[in-house]
Length: 504
Figure (spheres, rainbow, N blue to C red):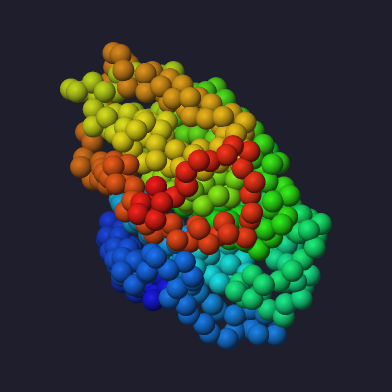
């Protein structure tokens, strides 16, 4: 079942590339959209077979491959990876819809999007460290080409910078994986046997340091973040949706799966430093977002700030904080994809993203009222307003982290206030007031333009009102993930943080 999530998009990419007849860009877009709709439907089938109350790795597939190298084709899914699989399929489907109908070189473009989806899904379901590394590196190729070919004026610089940073990340991860396997005395890179290995704490800390920098580049964490704003500004709207919504989650997923779980004593030793690192990332990203005048660059720095919340939750490593970390991954994926999709529509219709130029786009007659309304809802969700998915994820993160790291949690909460500040500046300047004379006579916005935003807006509100529908996927898994780390709370709790009858 899991292999089809990988190989269906790969097969679709091959068919789009070698199909003999000359198909128009519109027809190729329709075919790619249908292929991803099938993949999304199959993800729902996987969800039907997935047992949320079972914390073990499920739907396992195994095929011997290069046994001499310790590499095997092993796939599985649990409550950590399954929500991210759904997010990957959904956002790829919506990104294809958000693509311009008459894009240049459509065969290559849609093939690369499908390959990107396959590589990310493969990384999320890989149960072998080398297999994860192969998929982790494979997604680099289509993303680099998508930025360097269909990006903005400085696309070459942004794509090359992304390539260099990610290459360094891959080298560090490979070195850490080799160290975990050899120092643990294991003959293969299979994940399950590595759970029983014993490595001295000092060596765990060194290996964890390599993983932290490697995955920290991908997340990204300060000071390894500088590639992300450039990549977002130069990338097209669909690529930005996938980059912020899904690809950054490879870093946070890897930290939990391979850093926290495989090196628990090292994680406990470095946890206070990780919590402080989370605060620095959160506050720096928020303050930098306030200083931006480009809407896309502001949303990019907002993503960096929100990644700090996930690191804080992982550092605390309580069942509730890990549940919040997974929920924050999905929450941020939905919200950031929505914001980038809406910014893309604004740029397409007005020709600018400069918040010092745009004014009054909520004008019901000549502006973009529906796009503006969804933007207001999106920034409210990002700022953690109750009733939306962002509030649930941030509340879980802070509630689960506060007993372990009260000071760092309180400082991170300041980041939510700063989120409201910079997004209020954006909404107030761009969407309120009189319509700017530089952007009068705007082209009409079709329902096709609004479709990705409407879907994402509906999910943001739905999971904000009914979070248990998503939390139930991961609650059993997070309890097991947190078990090896015996944390001593600085704040005594009088009541359990998770009751058997409720996911909260």
